[in-house]
Image (cartoon, rainbow, N blue to C red; front, side, top):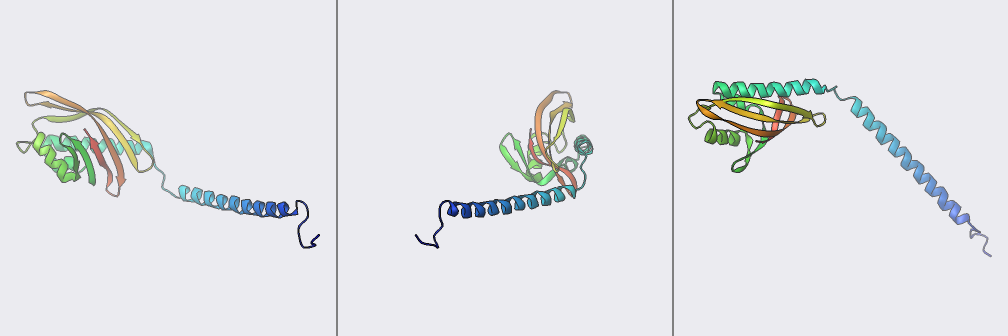
Length: 169
């Protein structure tokens, strides 16, 4: 018998000790990561879903007011520069592309033919910096039949305030 060779389950005991030590370090690492994340989360500014919803509703009011005054730039100011929209021709990119789509459909004379309003508007926060808004747009007046449709928009908090990043109307 070799005196330097482990006897019985001594080898398993040494391996078990190494595994327990490794598990201990892993557990300690997880505790530090969780604690670090909790500290970062608590350092974020407080977000009020009610005030965010009110802010997005205010942007909808601004877009309708701009539209109804014949100011397409005010209507388009609700869109982020990276915004996309689904229209009759498919995906449109950016406020300029969205504006071109509006001029081709609703602003053929350089002004909107009908007055814009929104109904059934619901805004749902999707985390701290994003929200989903759904509702119905209504175009009426000018001796024409009402045009209505349902929409879904995705919003993002930006330094300039809440802006649409996608519009599916």
